[in-house]
Length: 346
Image (cartoon, rainbow, N blue to C red; front, side, top):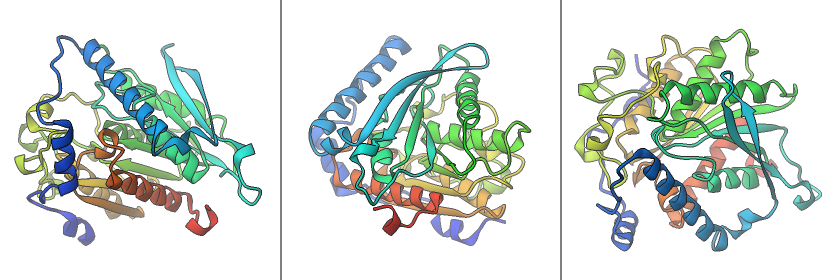
């Protein structure tokens, strides 16, 4: 039976979009502005350059503070099949810390979104910087192979291989948090399930799971892939939840890795979770149902709903006040997972 609190969060029709988002769409002419591409390589390159441009604008403006107090380096982790997985380390710069503060012992493993089709180490660079700076914890961002050039399973293979290599060097007092947005949230949840079921990974290695607008189930084709006990709760894959950032037409043909998070046979013994959702999002119910699954299994879960805003809007419009507020709410969720009081984190 689904948890009562999750039932209260079920909505059958999306609320009106926030006026600030509507104004943003008008300002940048978002609707219908995405160019068409003749091949996936061009789309991936366009997405990458757009993210880099947006990042540069923010780091030269409001978020210039995220250029200081962080040491950034790139490296390679070799996958089990020999593929080089690009990773980026964000370390709190010790010299920049006040004498009465120190970096947290542990690290965040970060998986970017993009439908498994687009995205790289630059696409969510601002989020990684903010986590590192605000929570004073190392962040390790993972790049993974994209579809359709690679089978979708390769994204999960890379995500899990990188996880295994990183935790092999984990010290006993360190805490590990998995973070992912959209399809990156899918990968983070899948990695947590694989780790729970693996004899290679000691119990309680993962201290928390932070999911932002995660994909947890394939809701297309009339929801035939949604586990029966969640079908009544999964209401968001419908026209009222569409936005200029995400439409049903674009998503009905999506390809996902097998064993999506909500399809697990058990949700017991998984890490506590903070799940941040947007109400005007086709994937809103993905997060609500996954929160219900975890709670029913006795897992401690917090859910934060950004009402009136579309899927991961903070990535497309980081300059908006509500985007920064959502990011800071995410940081609070991370501190909760780390069991760090806000007063202790300042």
